[in-house]
Amino acid sequence: MMGKARYVAAAACAALLAAGAGACGTSVSVVTEGAAQGPTIAIGVAADQPGLGYLHGGEYSGFDIDVAKYVAKTLGYAEKQIVFKQLSPAMRASALTDGTVDMVVDSFSMDGTHDGEADVAGPYLTVREALLIRSDSASEITGTDSLSDKTVCAVAGSAADDNIRNRTKNTRTTVAERDTYPQCMTALMIGEADAVAADDAISAGLASNNTGDHLKIVDVPDTTWSYGIAVKSGQDELVGQIDAALRAMVKDGSWQKAAADMGKSIGYTPDASMNPPKATAKAPSSGASAARKSNGGARA
Image (cartoon, rainbow, N blue to C red):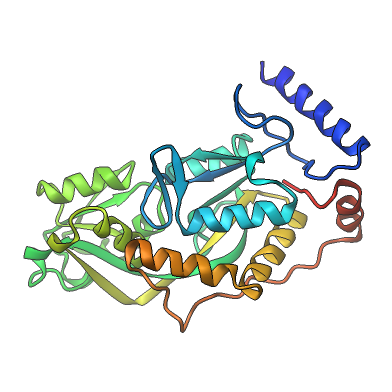
């Protein structure tokens, strides 16, 4: 079935090129029946991170979603050609390698080790390590050095999961993994966990969505990491194009608008000393330039 679908998509792409239209990428995803037709770009996103990647009422919203839409548009895709696919952090690398998605825009740490499974463009946001705790624990938990004999919930595959394990490996801290942030929030609220390991952006969104008066964010000021956009390994030309799109987003003010919208949504303002970060400049090869001229700039 997938082979037939990809054949249909390829035929549609060829027809569009013959007509002089853009938005035919090198990697074409096929949407489900009743959704947008023709060449599409599949983007892996979060659905459980208010303010960043959040699914509510059938619509995705948040800073990561705004970044994804801007990059896709710059690559030549109309918004109706974007297919968002919900991923958990543990699924992101495999979804890229097996072609389920063309890119991941989901608080993906470009500072981590990706074992050759992904190339990462960016950064597009730099955040600080944080712990989300119950307010009644504020006197006990003041940072990562006060977690002995405590249980910390971390989402499997997240940057915070790796980081909290490294920080507490020689202590009596228990790191309890869950698949999603809502599962960690449940563990925190019912007392199965004493803290949730995240960053300050994710923590702000979770607090705003879960009766924030009963929660407190504990910043860990000496540790930061940066979000990047991940693509399947070996796509240097695409990485360069995404980097160019991110630089354009900052230059034309769209990044700043998206950050302001995030502030209104969850009360989080990116640290101005680190943001907006500068995406790495990568010059595409002459072959990539020729390809963009022939397909109207769409790459995926």
